[in-house]
Image (cartoon, rainbow, N blue to C red; front, side, top):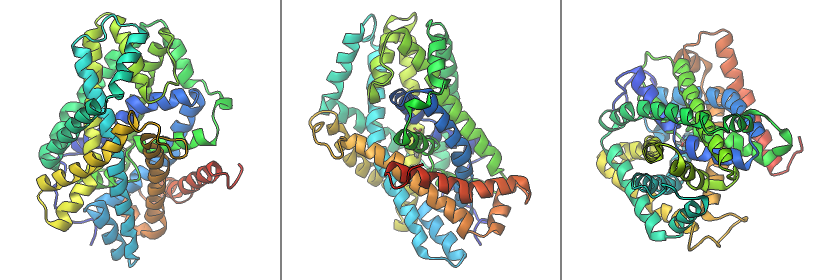
Length: 455
Ligand code: PHE
């Protein structure tokens, strides 16, 4: 009977451990590196509004569904889907959702790790005073020189993969839980400090206006898809990370409460990152829309000139590495859990295998910033393509299928008992959001982007 047993991989020691781990998964490069740069590229306020609406109407309900499926299945997403489908007498093909998630996790981690490598390298640069007194031109050159060196990028990418595998191989309690318990609170404190800094830049109100004043002329359907896709990406939804963490969740813990906490913390971190970065951008006459290099090309200028910049710059990049680290371990966990279950591997061996595959695919992203930056498909480099495919297509699609499974396939009896929201308004709200609102919203956005319908 699904839902009653305990995961063979162990369990979180407390509700807090789960909240910290899932928040660690959610809060990452997505919040600090990606959110500001895609907000800058897509015109600010209107984009942020669509993102916030997506979090509330799609992200939070689907996150509850994903945690719920995990806790009922108690296995890696592949086996969880197989087990839940079988228990309800449905097709074993539902396990393909788990497979798609494993693939998506590999693809995301392969480029995620390269960007995390940038952050590693920038930690060292900040700490050694490379930015001190440097002007915008110098900072830009540092960045362009850096990303045009395949060997440098490869070296940092390799280091980050190794760091990730070390934590993953230690397992749920020993590795994941210890890491996040330490890293997450530190991250919050550091961000609060940095917002304090931003308030003193003189452009705080301009930055805040850019983030929160919606100008709908600046966003089209593709922008809406990117905002919605980012809601999935930032909450780690649609590929099994949250499902696998949910499978380590003890029975007596409220899924709804913990989900709200996690999504709230994640959104807060993104908005705080925006409130740090845009005032600095505007105070220094920088470009909000300068792409994936935004934080690397702009923040060092500020750090190079502000009081205490060496210290705070170093702290900022350390924060970014930590945030990326706790997300990376969750990206690979579905694959590792499956290797342990089905191939009888030790966690250590499974981590090495998964890490090697990811590292190898990551070479494509490394090269897409230099030697192969002229190789394009649909006008996109390998990195752009991977990012677009995973965040804007695979994650929303995965989330859509989870939503369908949780409300159309799984019995309501199961979801009622697992969610413990009673059978009244709260449950109905969740149910209809997941059954109709979220899938229809995802489909409408998809169809508009490929121009099949015109809304
Ligand atoms: N949520 C992470 C971030 O914002 C990325 C991630 C996506 C992690 C999907 C796990 C699964 O950086």
